[in-house]
Length: 184
Image (cartoon, rainbow, N blue to C red; front, side):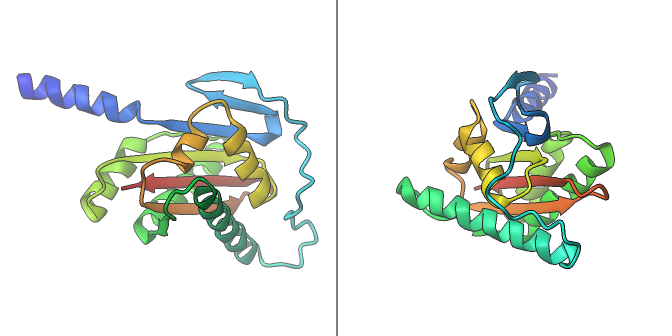
């Protein structure tokens, strides 16, 4: 019985891991289930939006994810922190979750514990966190949203993690959804 209680307590703690969300389209930041106005206009003046239809979406999505990776490590370097290494397992889990968010048409951390358990099993992860977002049209705008949020996002980016998986996927209406999955 004691082990069951400990297991439940540990599962609850893991579910309360540092997680954070943002959605540029609604000009809000979701923190612990409370939505607050973040003062954003929702305008993206940083570029990166492919509205011409000339580029392959997969290539553009990969380019955005690669640019986010570069910007994350550039930010970490500016703080004297080591760069993250990309990880295929984290990237696949991030892609699966991003596709789930697209199906639900909302950002979420649903089933985060399963992603953490998979990272623990396959990569010996001891801790993990994630950032999710939707609506931003460029790597720079999603990074700006995460870095300027009230809590969670920036802490994950600057956190004591070693590996990352980053995904940007455009839904059928042209809206991007993002997942960053961090672990060490």
